[in-house]
Image (tube, rainbow, N blue to C red; front, side, top):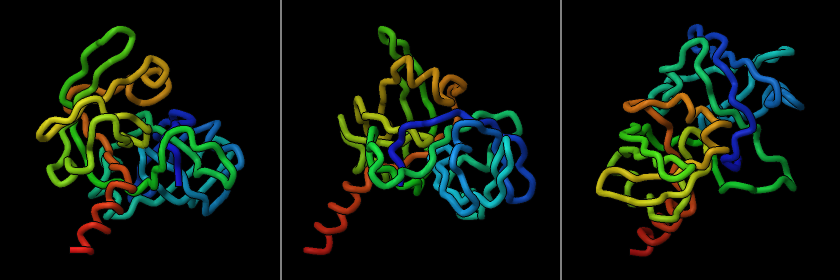
Length: 193
């Protein structure tokens, strides 16, 4: 489980076959083989580890559902180590199970913040509500407005500078994970019908 609070922006070192290697510093602290790490919001298992990087294997299901297959050497990625027992839950409950990819439609300045608008698959829209949680590339964010097939979020300067959002451009693909609690509520209600 994760919180959606990005610890570090790592850099793709290589992507050969299914092996994705990420250069990192802070995310390596206490990391061991077999540990879970969120990379752009996808929970993956550490399979190689050295003093400056770690590697994961990206299986076909991960590549179909996420934007990881688009990564190339030098690309920035959001990193978060799994939440330890007794850790602080500063964002929201993020599983690292990406639901789908969305697309960045626009970025507009608003005061010191930036309003990002994303298109999402129609099947996710029922779970996206104003002032509700959403994880975008592993970042815990709050929905500002919901539209028919899109939504907006407000990115504060700190989040913009300390995540890969500073490199995002119109048309980019992003990983979306909707609130797990909303999915459980829907499942419970539909099972009672």
